[in-house]
Image (cartoon, rainbow, N blue to C red):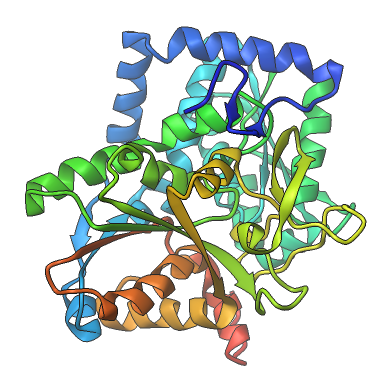
Length: 396
């Protein structure tokens, strides 16, 4: 899909200061060396299986299926991974790579805190130093995750610039990396940023679709008709889509955070409202104001609260291979409550965006059709926020 400089159609590339060029070249060379190395892959597989708890389950949501009265719905349970989200897949891969490169320190950005917790976890496991940059706004929304990161031995630095959310945390982490290339690896949490990050993160997350395919063939003897995942930067979604891209019969749907609606300024639905731009080292679609400045975005979900989308998603959209739909806060909160009551599974508010779309389309599909929804994370981190949204205050 991508050529040597990490282009996906017009998207991707390396739009970075000269000071970072050596770091990304070193990373690309190391990755190209290790990605086909049997020893590296053996170690990574062992970490994923023994430490993270893979393969994750593909669960037939029978009650939800019956209740909606249409397509069969399966849930890919990334929420069952150690640390409670898909993030660990990529982090274990990058931390292992950093260790092989002789790095002793990991830095990361985080929005909802899931990627930060995963990075702090891997750093603790591998005996590395860890610093996590998190928008000050997000540190308030996700106080529990901040505590967890510090408990795991990481230093959490609140970022106060800009909107004090995820995009500002990314900027700060890149700045830090520039000044400490020799001993530090920037463990980027999504399929974005300069090449080779979108490719590296996708490859480590592609285990999701590899497993879905194997599990689906085992359970149903065929591929699913539709695969749905939520999209912020887009790592769980590209991981969910990747091994199906060549299978034309499988419909791929990414669900963006519409916030209070794509007709308002309080949205984070990049494909639906953004336009082509360059930011954080890549060319892709971004939410921008009329002057081409990166627009402030909003979503109830801290994890989808990013003004851009990974370059490979932008490309899949351009070639009409994947469809990107916008889901509002309201729809996501309803889905969050629905799955909790119907299947006894409390999903992350991010994942609830994907569930909301499944709830819309399943009833319109025949009973012999199959939908797979990736539950990218678990929802305990969101309970206080959803309670607030419903007008109830609970002490964390």
